[in-house]
Image 1 (cartoon, rainbow over the protein chains, first blue to last red):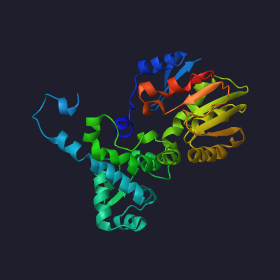
Image 2 (tube, rainbow over the protein chains, first blue to last red):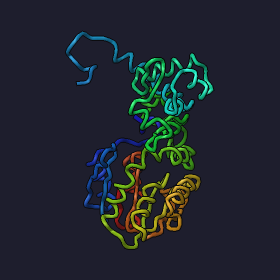
Image 3 (cartoon, rainbow over the protein chains, first blue to last red):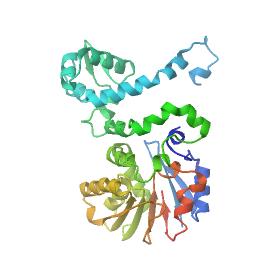
Image 4 (cartoon, chains in turn brown, orange):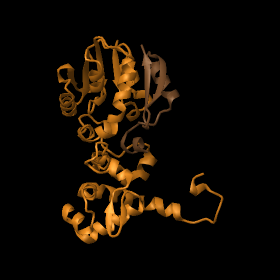
Length: 47
Length: 271
């Protein structure tokens, strides 16, 4: 909802969508790492 | 099952009324933070007159506000005195090291709230009513506010993020932090690896906040600033790791920073 309200085209992306973005940009080995006691997840890729 | 979807019990309009009035909860919490109510409650003694005096507010106003906050569980009222709940003591009292009170200044910022007055129009058009590119309009001052106030919400994830990116690497390395904001993530890497050199990329007024945080962390000698537009500035490099935090979701797929920023050689992007 925040992205709809304040951006032109922003969105909430799923891990599979983020993985596709990383691949399109030339990065592989994409992994997700949820941060304990937090709503955040770190998504890492490698060149 | 969500109460609004439950087939058990008689139907009642509670959920609808709650959603129609949810703005009261936001406004009450923001007002209490602005008036410094939670500090007053923490310092005690918690009687109405003391809180009203501390907040330079009317006793009637403070009584109704604090009773409202009590109903929603962020204060306790006993024997005509107010005291903290565990939640308010930890996350709302500005004296708590885990206080999130400052983030109300960003989340409650006029530019963040105004679009919701026009949400039906936004849904019709599928885009914000904010001018230009919305939140990512160049030099948008809300990101200075973000950098100055959101650190308490982001700080707890800095250490685990830093450890993930470093993977035990203790040698010299260069890190690019795109849309650095408060700078805490790159700064954490510099703290965990004394041989790491970090470059923060963001608008110049935002980077001043990041540099101030680097000074506080004692890593300013290894913190470089790269002011400008993330889509246009020359990254320099090469870098061993790239941070791209709290940024991708502001863009559509076709204009994703991942696609636009990384045709340039820039090894080992992370996060």
